[in-house]
Length: 87
Image (cartoon, rainbow, N blue to C red):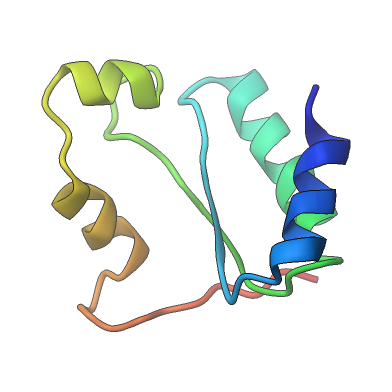
């Protein structure tokens, strides 16, 4: 619903990487894929990550105790900055 604003923000900020945390259901997977495709126009480096299996979404993951380190391990699995380029 906020795709237009998000695309404008990414165009303005020009981040080196955009990370999308998707929900673990079919609508969340489809929505994240569509959003990633839209965001690769203003930012070529877009990474889609997901909470662990059995966790519905990022809110549930945080409530279960997710930490910044958990996110960092998904974003930078080798400990280094890793980018996934779509398009």
